[in-house]
Amino acid sequence: MKKYWWLGVVIVVLGVCGALIWRAHSAVSCGKTDGLPGQRISAGALAKWTANRSDIIIETRDNELYLQEAIGSNMVSLTSPRLVRNNFILSMEVMSQTRSAVVSFKTVNDNGSANYVLTIRQNPLKTVAELRYGLKLIKKADLAAMEAGKFYEIRLRKTGARLTVDIGGVTVFSETEPSAAGGKIVIALQGQPDHPAGITIRNMRLYQ
Image 1 (tube, one colour):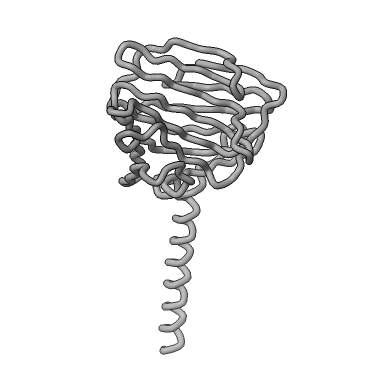
Image 2 (tube, one colour):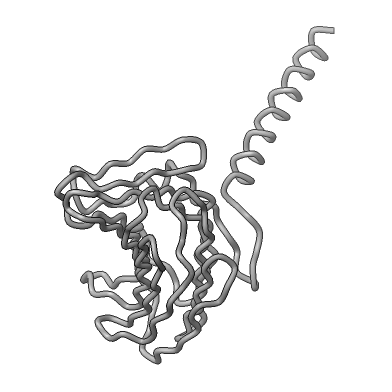
C-alpha cells in the first residue's frame, strides 16, 4: 500500500512540474507570424534593457512598463541586450502620458550607429512620423493627432532591406534600403527640459 502511495505522490509532482514548465513556455512563446517564431517581451524583461541614463524613471505593473524622463534630462532610451536578425517583426502598444513627446524606435549596430530610425513627433495639433536610414530622411508623413492616454499599436516589419511600419493599424511607411541590416533595438523618448515626456508600453512581441 505504501508503495502505491509514493507512486501517487511522484505522479502528482511530475504533473505539477509539467504544468509549470508549460506555463513558463506559454508565457514566452506567442506562435508564429509569417513563418517567424514569436516571443513575448514582458514588462519585467523590458525594464532590464540597457538604459542610457541613471536618472531614467521606470515602473512596471502587470504587463505594462512606464518610462519617463527626469526633469532636465535630454532624451532617455532602452537598448535590447541582443541583436535582432535581418528579418523580424516588432509590435507593441504605446501610450503617451503627455500631449507632446518625441518617441523613436531604432535598430543600431554594435558601434551605436543607427540603421533604420522611426521617429514619432506628437503634439496637440498633429502627429508627424519620420523614417530615416542613418541620418538620411527617407520619408515623412503627417498623421492625425495621437491622443495622450490612449494606446496605439506600433508594428515594424523588416524583410530583407524593406521596412514596413504600421501605426494604429494603418501602413505609414514601406521603404527599401539595400544596405539595411538588423541590430539592437532602441526605444528612445524625449520631451521638453521643463516638461519631461512619459510613455507606457505593453504587449510587446518580437518575431524572428
